[in-house]
Length: 125
Image 1 (tube, helix red, strand yellow):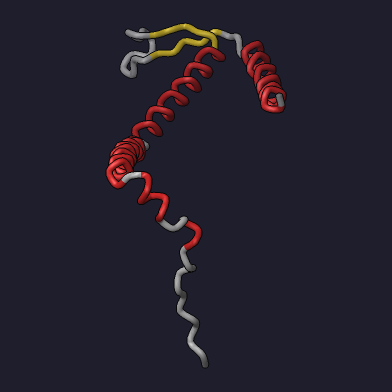
Image 2: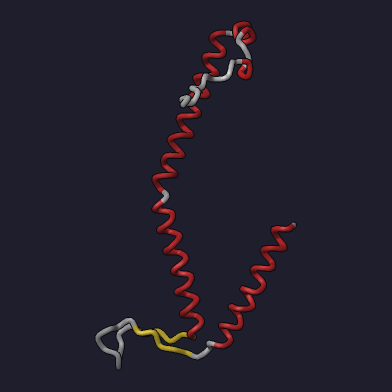
């Protein structure tokens, strides 16, 4: 419930700001992609200014997301390999438990009953 309220408190002002930005920048501009002939461009698009800015913003978010996704590829691969190794080790533990039997497992000391590890005292002066 709190998450929905926080989301509404963030999205509502953002929506109001975007709508007011769009209303304030309705004038039509010509976007030319021909650097050689400014008077008669080969490729030109007439669009409202807010549409151009919003399209550039959306494009920037997409390019940034793709760049982040590509940079994280090595971590996703490492996670996949670790998950596969964990599955293999769990299967091996299960196989070994079946092999030694439940009687021997019950005679083993509990994990918390081992003595604490030895520590080296600091040097005396």
